[in-house]
Image (cartoon, rainbow, N blue to C red; front, side, top):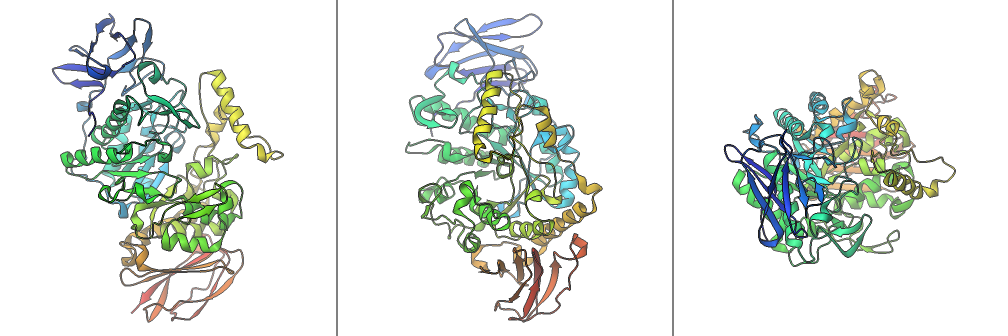
Length: 613
């Protein structure tokens, strides 16, 4: 293990607060406690550029800043609360003050997760952690077992996706700060819902980013889309690594977060002998031993590399799971016909079958879009190690107009697409509002205070969508209207069609939870066949009896097909997406069927059969 040292303001009852900051670039560091009578305390320099002091009278809520070399007055890089935003004073947080009620909660294993990704600012009318709590009964009713929060680390202003955070330890003040986040996590656990937190360890936002004034947080060894890379393997990198290890441990330990989703790990540059991600896993393993429970680490990567999730003893990094974008791309291109940008590598029906049987579509194949060979073979990796979706914040919000799938395909097609995610062997993830066909877009938005930065963001978005010339302009990311247009309407409460779609999602989720064949779905316990000309997919789960036969027609035409030979005497229908109960046009429900029976599938439909003995 490299250096492990607590940083930031650590409050201990009856002792006061110990302030520790890594500032190797400074010759002198002074702490100012912003009480009614400001108190200035010099910090003592220790090895490796750490500075520390104990302030006996600094308690919960005490505002403070550091002064570097008598000139620069700055917030704490490891601040746990920025009550007045990224440029203002930091505040001490006493974690012993919160009365947790989740003492018996141990989290859920990967195979039980049905994840619901949400953005705190647009998920509720209030746009806060407390606002999200009010909607937890709806999520419980839907059947999801985990929420995934887009990043909540303090960012400039009040409107942001969260990937411009500059205080990784501080829960966003406008969302409700650390107290609000703890309330949300505690409320989730009370409902039996795990909490996944999206954390960004590959870059920092530009506004309010004072790290470089303190220490060697960045390196010019690597170029990134955001400028110099965070320093994970250059001189002084032990202390940068420690900064982020302490961050991860804080969320899991002090906020009772169950899992971390690690943003874009392919942009964490580390050529050292022990990769940052491996050591992060080892640090979290230690916390697991202390707490007697499991914490999950889920990576986002575009490299299709099983090294992330393979055991450390086998040369991997030991992470629990990773996002699996190939599955999204295979589905999206087949149902929308879109083949622009990175979608040009997809659109072939056989890729959907390969994604189900072997996971990575690009498993050592040449990518025309990237102009290089990509990926490793994930056939042997358990399906529970991969998170799949048909929509998420990236795939929706990085479109010029933020259209959801609701705007891109007919209503009936939304149902087989839902089935492809929820009936796959992989860990399913929904994007907020997907379950009822939310019609508001999810757009890209910011609220920077630096006008030059605002203009740069606007121009960047325009350049990104230049190939859409003639189709209008991208919405202004700085505009409040862009943000408000991205809020959920929850139309299913009054719109009958949306209500029926939500009921369909509930039925699929219930089936995933209740069907013995889906108790522990995995690739070896499936039969898969894609009829490429017809766009008809046969997916049979055979892990336990009764087996489950899922038939998808993702074409816009009715299709005739024959049931595959499976070890079952006959099949009975358990769900038909064309049923009027799910907002469909109505359809005859096939009754008892045998191996080789012909089935007529309506356009854009899903039929599910259960084995009869």
